[in-house]
Structure formats: C-alpha cells, structure tokens
Amino acid sequence: MKDLGVRVGTPEDIDELMKLAMSACDENGFVEPNPQKLLSELWHGLVLADGIVGVIGGVGEKLEGAVLLRISEMWYSDSRILEEKAIFIHPDYRSAKGGRARRLVEFAKRCAGELDIPLLIGVLSNDRTEAKVRMYERQFGKATGAFFLYNARTGMHKMAAE
Image (spheres, rainbow, N blue to C red):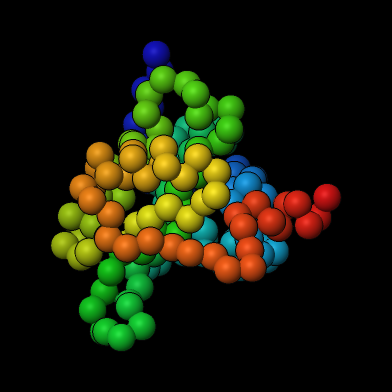
C-alpha cells in the first residue's frame, strides 16, 4: 500500500484542491458556493497566511482528501483558535483502506498542538452523520454541542442546481 501521509499543501495544489472543494460543496453545501471565496480561503491556507491545508496525494496528482484549517477568533474573544473549515475525502477513496479522514483529523490536531491554540472542528452533514460523529468521538472524546439546520439540508445546493 502506498504512503498515505498528509502533507502540507502548496500553491501548486490549487487546481486539484479547487476540484475537491467544489465536490465537497456539491455534497455537503446547503447554500450556493462562491468559487472566488473558496479560492481565497484555500489560497490563504496554501501560502500559510493565517491557515494551512493538509492534503493526501502528490503534487500535480488527483487529491484523495484534504483539510482546510484557518486561524481565526471566536466572535466574543481576541484569543486565536484553529478553525477547521472543511475535511473532505474524495468519494473514490472513502472505502479504501488507510483511514484518510482519521489521518486528516490527526493532522489538524497536530497543527493545533504545534500552535498551542484550541482546535474547533465538527461534522455538518446529513449523510452518514452518525458514523462521522463516531469517528470524531474516537479522536476527541464526547462531542461538545451539535449543529442544527432549519429550512435547509446539506447537499441542497446540488439538488437545487439539478
């Protein structure tokens, strides 16, 4: 089996990362994505400007998965946090061996530890939610809260476009 290490994304990954991000929006988005906003968020992570992107896959190759992490602040504080914006595994690799999602979560934990700031991470999905939550609980322990959507479901953006 090939090495499934998570590497730090670089600007050379932008095209493949945008493809992966648009797939993530199609699957998990509940509002229409703005490609320019996506590009900006990803780019900041790829150039290490208040963020970082962890990717699985070689430079110039189709990416198997990625995590976008941004340094931000909670609305009520000046303290910095590491905020997970998205973790996404390409559907072609979800059933493959190697624990890609777990590896991306471990990358996020490592980054937060090295920065010595809290990591805010979670699941916002109507698809296989319980299984995803169980994986996160194995990594972090019992959940802290929950997300709820009213008048929306994840994947709605794609359904509305079809």
